[in-house]
Length: 243
Image (cartoon, rainbow, N blue to C red; front, side, top):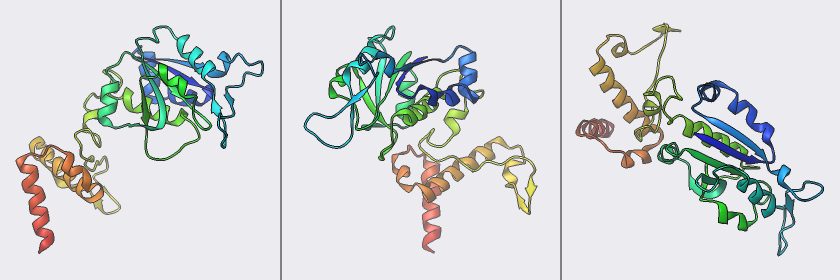
């Protein structure tokens, strides 16, 4: 996948692109990143990218000219999926990330100040938000999107099952995990994880995912596809609480 990032703070992306899983994916040729400084496309002699809003009001608005010229300078921009990171957009989720991972080329626009000139939206395919809160700019949301989406691209993770097993992979929160030693400060790893019975381990993990979700994010339960065993387990839990 090719990802082009448009920003006025290109230096912010070095740590994300040049570290950990993302770095290895770049080295393998699975991911390609190109960072474009929007200021480089400003026709203003001071390389300004913002101006006062028409109609008055607080703050500044990013101008259409530098942004639109920056987008149109990218090879293949017409067929790329062009995303503006915005609090008014569709909320990023596992399903959205899986959908985006199927694209070959993403262009991510990071806004700032009071937003961007609305005319830029004629070049944008969609807006995506990472939650119902306001940040200083679109750089952090772009980093979150990159990290989230890249995990669903074949070859990025060392273990392809990881992306499916983690929280929200099947709509539930992830089950508890343990590693060596089997006992630490008097706390023991559940015996079921030590006996090598994979069927029992799978059953335990599923039940623990259901318990964690019920405890911490109960609203997710109704959105999941539950098996008969899941429903019986939850029903038994409910009955035990009533006693």
